[in-house]
Length: 268
Image (cartoon, rainbow, N blue to C red; front, side):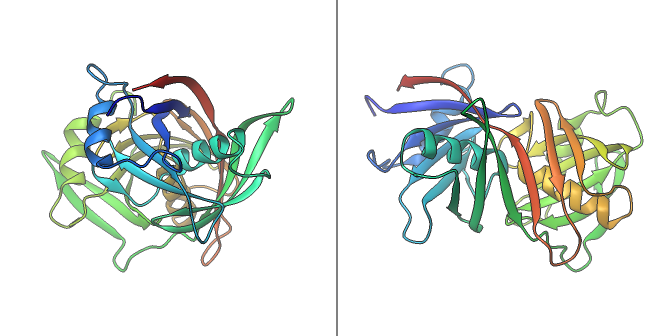
């Protein structure tokens, strides 16, 4: 494909290539995502996000991971898309609804000095599948995890050790691809510093370690509150920055607030 306009954006270090497919339909977005996400031979990103028209919302988000697999939802990507839609004039107000493969999600943009710098997203109701707290073996270790459904699957694991020294790839990849997760899963490893501050590293399905994961942070918040480890609101620190999470318990929507930053524009 020649002459494809794109915008590189990041939210707490979770970076994506965004394309306005309202005007430019993409024939094979899975292949395009694999190509442009390569950090040596492409643009470099955690995946591809298409901004598309919607019949039921202000705009639609279609997301592909770096390996070309399609993802139901991405919290950081949602903030990026909302900022782009407003900045490009596709949406006329700072309050909008975005259609995702996980449903319709309301977004309110956050401004500083008149500029959009982030967004507050109603992430939906966290769901805990039956038997959501289980154990799983990965190489030489057994972990207890909490399964959380945020429209996409998550396995949240609380650790009592040095999170930075933890071998994320060694233990995260086998869990992502375990037989019990037929669609694979995102894996979050978490250390609780205090009831209102947690640290998280994410092994993201289809992309490997990412500097942040919005749906993952939401899953972590819900699992931490449900297990009595944390209270709402809280700050979750990821390798790329901080996200603020709020959740008031069962049947309530979780709310995530975080940054949305344009890095550069280009033509592919």
